[in-house]
Every structure is written in structure tokens, then in C-alpha cells.
Image 1 (cartoon, rainbow, N blue to C red):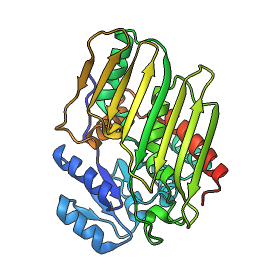
Image 2 (tube, rainbow, N blue to C red):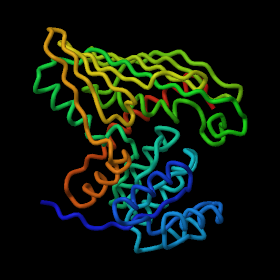
Image 3 (cartoon, rainbow, N blue to C red):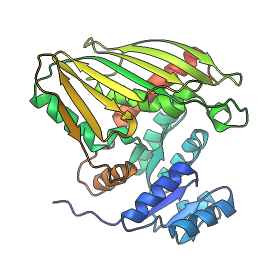
Image 4 (cartoon, helix red, strand yellow):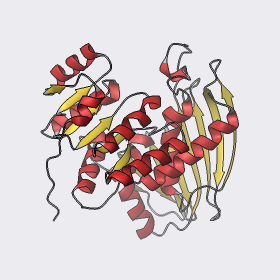
Amino acid sequence: MIWLKKYNWACIGCGDIASDMAKVMVQRGKSFCGVYSRTAKRAEAFADKYGIEKVYSSADELFADESIDVVYIATPHNCHIEYILKAAKSKKHILCEKAITVSFDELEKAVEAAKKNGVILAEAQTIYHMPVFDEVFSHVKNVSLGKLKMLDVNFGTKKEYDITNRFFSPELAGGAMLDIGVYALSFVRLFLSENASEIKSIATLAPTGVDDNAIILLSNSKNEMANVKLSFSAKLPRTAIASFEKGYVEFDNFNRATRANIIFNDGRAPIEIRCSEDIYPLHYEVEDMETALSGGGNKMKLDLTLDVMEIMTKLRNEWGAK
């Protein structure tokens, strides 16, 4: 059995997702040890709310704190690479919100810095850590569903157009792809036996030049195919279906799924897979990160993160997205 050390975490950013992670830390019995935000008052309020001992006056002060083992980055996408590189140089392990960077080139630099400094770098991607997916893959193998044939993924959320909102801001790396497309493509990559080699798409851009809607078709040399629909201007059911030779698996709210249904083509009774709904999804990211730090096996799937970022960068470049 691997003994899990109590690691000291610090947080950069105080938005909604950072609050969700702070709640997870409290539930696990140890709050963030420190927090930094470019807005000092916001950081102080965040620290008071979640029982955080230190409020750093600068990111550099955080990185210089030798008591910190792991840095959780929850800022807008465009800031990620700056903090990742500084964290790696300071020998801090890094869990960074998705999308982990804004381009494949940035991610390659981040990976190189992490390797050079001997730290673990990972994207905080719920899909790679929710137990329901391990259960699904076990069932797919044990009940002989056969080879994967087709994936269908939908993610659309209605955003009222506002030039000042980060979702539509080129300066803050807005757009549907980096915000919600990363979930859909991470689901696709988790199921594909190898990365997509052929990609076709059509997309529309918002007036600010960020991507707004997209339909993406992907395939690989194994004849596995995927259809992905993304939207910032229409709400879509957050569903995903993985179709195999002998049946299919369907997920609701696939990015934080706690249940899945396996439907067979031959009339066998469906199988419902249910995992705990009492544990907040971000808990599993932290648990897997600390397991990796303790030498218990690395389930952070950085290789898949690289594949997804390669696809996203290719598509955004093709669309001319800003």
C-alpha cells in the first residue's frame, strides 16, 4: 500500500472553479495553505471564507514559499503558461485548469519545463478522473461489446454576447473550444485507441473573432470516428454516446458523469453503472494527483492532454479564431 503524504497546496485565482476546489480541500480535511490573486481584496475574502492561512502579495512570493508542494492554477487560460513555467522552475508540482494552455506550442514548453525540473504537470480534467469511466471500460471489456465504432458528443451553453465577458474576449483566450470543447475532445480522446489522424470541421466566429459554434468530425487509422458539436449561442444536451460493435454506452452530463447505461444490440438486459454522487468531482483530480506524487501510479493522462491540445490548436488555426 502506498502511504499518501499530506501535501501542501496553494491556489492561484479566486473564481468559481477555484471556490469549488477550495471546498474540496476543506472536505478532505486540509485547506489550501495559501492563495494568490491579482486582486488582493478578492484573495483576502477567499482566504477568510475557506480558512486559508496565507495570502501572497505576488505570484513570485507563492513560488518562493518552500513549504508549498503543489500549485493549483485557476486563472483565465491566457495566464496559464506564465504560472506553469514559474511553478516548474520553483520545483512545484502543477495542477492547471483546462484548457491547460492556449496552444500546442505553449503546452510543449510547459511539458519540457516540468520534465527539466522533475515535477508533475497535469490538466484538471474531470473526465480523466471520474470513477464512472473506469467502471465503463471494465464493463466494455467484460461484456464483450466489441470494437469502438462511433462517438457522439454534445456540449452547448447559451452565452449572451458581451464583448467584456471573458467567454468572448480574445485577450482572455475566450471561445467555445478552449472553454467547453476541451471537455468534449477529452471524452473523445479517452475512448479512441489512438489520436485522430483526419479532422474536418465547420465553425462560426463571434464578432470579437473567438469561435462560437462548431461541428467537428474526427477519425483515426482504426476506423474509429467521432462527431462533436459545440455552441456558445445555443444550449445543447450535455450528452455523449460511445457506440461499439455489439452495443453502446450513453452518458448524461458527461464531463462530470456519475452514471452510465450500457445498451446491447442482442436484447440482453441493459446495465446501469452508478458511482457515488456524494463526492464532488474535483475530489478525484486531487486524489489522483496526490497518488501520483506518492509514487502510486500516474493517472493524470498528460499524453492525452497533449493529443487534445494538438487537435484544438489545429482547428482554431484553421478557423482563424483569435
